[in-house]
Image (cartoon, rainbow, N blue to C red; front, side, top):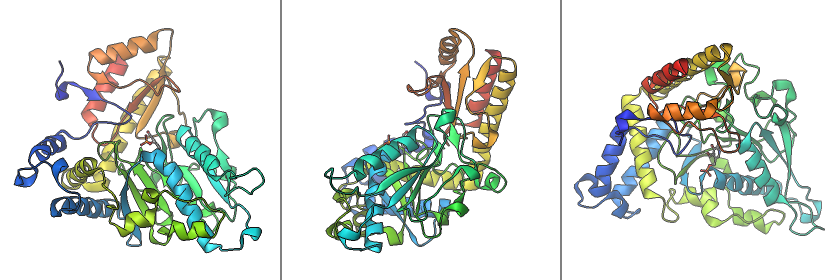
Length: 409
Ligand SMILES: Cc1ncc(COP(=O)(O)O)c(C=O)c1O
């Protein structure tokens, strides 16, 4: 039976968390700050949990330098829940800003940038939610594809000239890091010169931009945070256990969705998914997932106290990714492996995807890796291959050990 120290966990999510944080959380689960009660046994409206959630919010705001005109929300339903919630909230905001009579209503476009499995799922959900209530009625909105790399089997990003944004879209949507395919938009420092940088300047003035940051949240600075309308992330990669979703919402988008629905031509939003309801209640409209929020709060404190903040994380995460890609590029020259993503600027720092060349070799690689303590390296079931996820809690030492294993295979 291996100990934590003997295992290198490369899971794509839920994924490893810092051991010291888990030790503290284990203690808090039994007896939170000498109350004689565990954190999960305390009211979410009591002073103890209020301090936890407020501390998490303050630390997240400072870590990511979130401007004052944005509200941080803790929600449920994961990234998938937000595929739906962003559509409903942002269509409501758009409807309130365009209160034309129903007979003059035309469905607004919603522009999706498709770069992999997760943005495609989000697009499919937008199509589902906005389809006409009756065949004779107009649709609630017209989701469309503003750019797509499907033809490359999701192995690269669109170039600037490949984007086609509508000028009157209710919003533009992209996924910053495609966890399954291993595609990520370039970092803030690389994006100045990269042809693959997200083209914020091509999005027409006034159009809201939404980003799914589920698998790259707090791994490095967010390029142009102030140009986004909504950023969201499920916690279970870099932040904490599954069960909580973090949102960063620009304040003008905290709208009353019931008022919007009264105008017609926009669907109702389930009450727990309304951003304004969550904001008005400090993310405590109903019972929140207290334990995941508690552990996330501990992780944020740990990152600020021990990891040199976002700059420290960026440096380490860059070093880990560069080392693994360099090792794989060498192994590819020797004909042993194939990297899924060839373009260096489009490669994910968080999810490194590759294939092992040769009949039966992948099985042998995964079995050999498992014996040495390298766990959860199997690629997503939809694409196969190998995937090493290098989230914040994966150490440079674990990546070095994996590189040695790849070299020796
Ligand atoms: C980028 C991205 N978006 C959305 C999701 C869906 O998240 P959830 O399973 O929390 O609904 C995932 C899950 O891995 C993801 O990686």
